[in-house]
Image 1 (tube, rainbow, N blue to C red):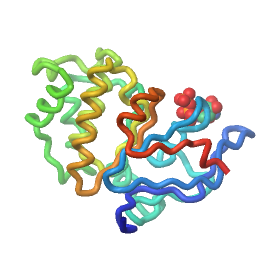
Image 2: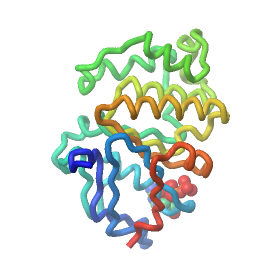
Image 3: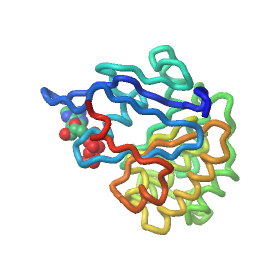
Amino acid sequence: MQAQDVLLSVRGLARSVGSRRLWQGLDLEVRTGERLAVSGPSGVGKSLLLRALAGLDALEGGEVWLRGKPQSEWPMPQFRAEVMYLLQRPAPASGTVGGHLAEPFGFRIHAGKRYEPGEAARLLHHLGRPPTFMDQDAAHLSGGEAQVVALVRALLLNPTVLLLDEATSALDAETAELAETLLRTWVDAGPARALIFVSHDRTQQERFATRIQPLSGVTA
Ligand SMILES: Nc1ncnc2c1ncn2[C@@H]1O[C@H](COP(=O)(O)OP(=O)(O)OP(=O)(O)O)[C@@H](O)[C@H]1O
């Protein structure tokens, strides 16, 4: 593999909460085509690691790199358009599902992208949602439906790296596997895509990950 295959990496990352040091000297990287699982016991800092990778929390030590350039040198909106973080409980949305999916295409940072309703419908269909789902009230979705919408919204925006923080945890087993198929296809379609995910479901980790990185194993 070439150095340019590395899409996202961290070097020497440190994080404390209060007086407790969670990790320091943490190194990690994800390359084109990878589906990296970050594993570890509750409270080890998996979510905080994904938040650091996404540029959502200030770094205490170390540096995050995207495609060979430090996070600090990226305009943050552009960085966040390339490194997208999906959390377990997506923020409440308003309007219809279709409107919510189309909304970010009106943001300046996504100006070069075009909303394709047909593609949105195809992805929703793959995840078992009927055509009428587009007209449903986005504010009153179930936990699993909200995860489906968040996932489809992210895929439509086509980032470079997707960070999934228990982002399929509310889905039934069948839909979770359909989501994995969709994500696998998305990563493989490239040319330069990868994802990092956190899941408490050990069978999902083993089934879906191309590599598993134990967080405790990288703590200095
Ligand atoms: N904003 C915060 N302020 C203070 N402590 C925090 C904050 N966010 C997280 N923590 C603490 O940091 C530690 C790591 O949290 P994090 O959510 O990253 O763990 P995790 O490994 O994802 O856990 P889980 O598997 O239970 O989701 C926990 O002990 C948590 O209580």
